[in-house]
Amino acid sequence: MPDDRPYANDLEEYQDEAYFDPADGGRRFDSHLLREPVTILPKRKPVLLSPMNTVTDAMRAMKGEHCGAVVVTGDGSAATPVTGIFTERDVLFRIVDGGRNPATLALGDVMTQQPECLEDTQTIAEALNMMSVGGFRNIPVVDAERHPRTIISVREVVQFLVESFPQEVLNLGGDRQRQREGG
Image 1: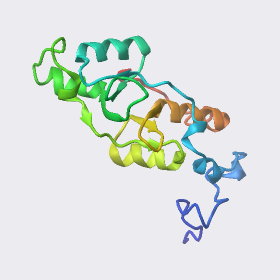
Image 2: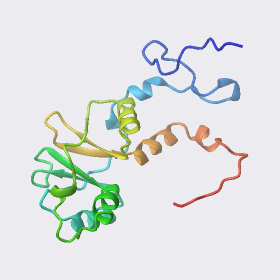
Image 3: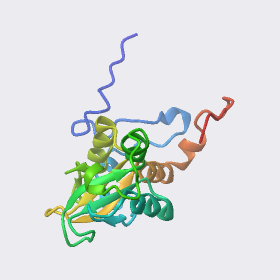
């Protein structure tokens, strides 16, 4: 039997497309939610460092703040534009795998330079798209001059969606046995 429903990703034309099946008692996914600016997501102040800080400084800051990335600006403050990002993945792939000494290695030598950022006017849909397509776990949110405002992670987006649709998330896969592999 052919499915005559319109494609759900065509948000402009089909604003009320059901994501959850109302026949099962689920709520309808409100596509307007995806058009909200990223500023409605849970906010986390970015950890800011300069390119002159060491990798050890960055690793300590990430551990202390329980985050997976530091944002690098020209002088390590929010008054200068974002010039880079350094993540926990960089520790694994650029430091450990390369056998480099994190105590003497400057962030400027191993950070991702001029990272993709979201402007604070962009939408949740754009954030999800950037994360999915780019494989990013953390994205700096900046103003029009690229000054850092916040940072969003996959964790904040998931938390937001869980809070927006708690029943749907709690009822997913309830009769499957869950097994954990890793963290």
